Amino acid sequence: MPFKMMLQRKCACQCQLTHAQSYHSLLTSWTRQTLAASIIYSQILYSVIQTEAESSKGA
Image (cartoon, rainbow, N blue to C red; front, side, top):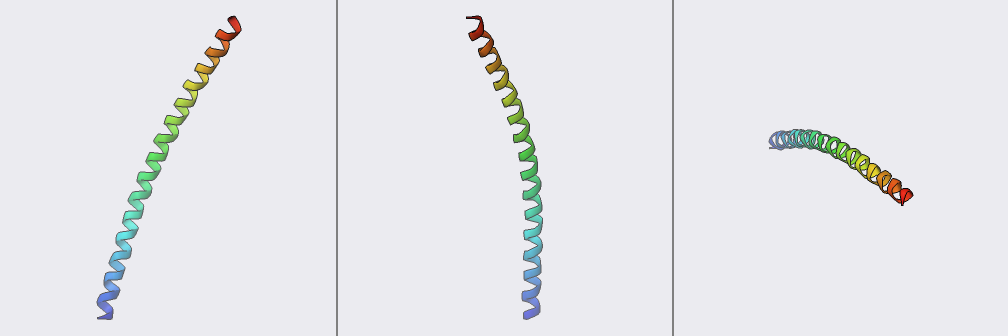
């Protein structure tokens, strides 16, 4: 009986480990995509602000 419980516990641990690994890889890819998107967004925002500043200087 205790051996069976140990076996179940070991299996559960391994399941959690693989789940954590897949979650981690998913999280890292999501973080990379979000980071790339935020960099692109900030560049677009910066160029818009630059354009606004240029036009307000002209006027």
